[in-house]
Length: 364
Image (tube, rainbow, N blue to C red):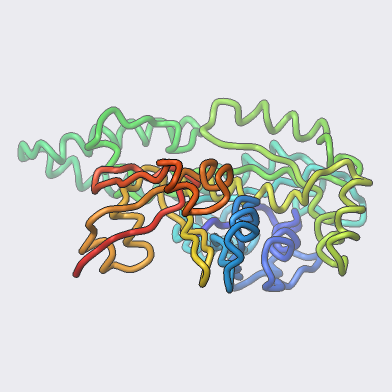
């Protein structure tokens, strides 16, 4: 699952990417510095994994991961191919969610592509380009659907009606995600359309060091603007986060964070938000060889969760032995959980809960 970092040139996208991943994207004070999208596989910070490690003392620990893609800066006219528009739109289409970075700090030494700092205008610039591209896609599909609908095809009639609603929203300057599906058929169609503006969005307000703990007036304006969108907002001092990642020891990083009034690096909170944005959750396997966090979709069943380990586990699924994370920690070991009668045996219908510690029985 991929989350793509987008924004205008010079808002801090590549610096943020560098903070999030070990890959070092080039970061410079001019537009189109990132030409090919950089991809980083980022560990999802999870204190539960550390606790399980303490209890089990395994040979190795493997965290859950998310793919983060750093995409070239977008400018006005991208939907018509301006700048690196076509490439940008192609790269973003391949992502499952969008991390939209907005510049929310003043600094005369860092040029702004539009000459002044205004995150509301910047957001609208990108929204308009993405909406225009979606409008192009919707109108092409609508033309085909209308022709087929005239023959009496019921499915085409449903598709055409939905496309009309999406088209109307886009013409009003609203993203496609504001159009709520009215039934299962419409949900499936919206997924099929693969529109850019249906993707979930996390707005990251890039603030200066002085606003790292509390945010600023720019952040409040962004919150106000997106309150009717199905989107999240967080603020982060990206330049300061970059400084933190350069420090050698954990102790030094913690001291820096305390001075800023922060409990943890903002990048950690962002990664968890991206994970949530992608509708992902974690279950664990815990044994002496390995304690591991596995990534699944929220709502996945036990066989689907087993299939993440290996497709044979899903095909030959018999049952799952499940321990709630809190029970595992409270009793301190799998054997003590069993003694207390807290280990559950679940079948194919079981919906996995975030934090479940699981062991699968299968036969192929």
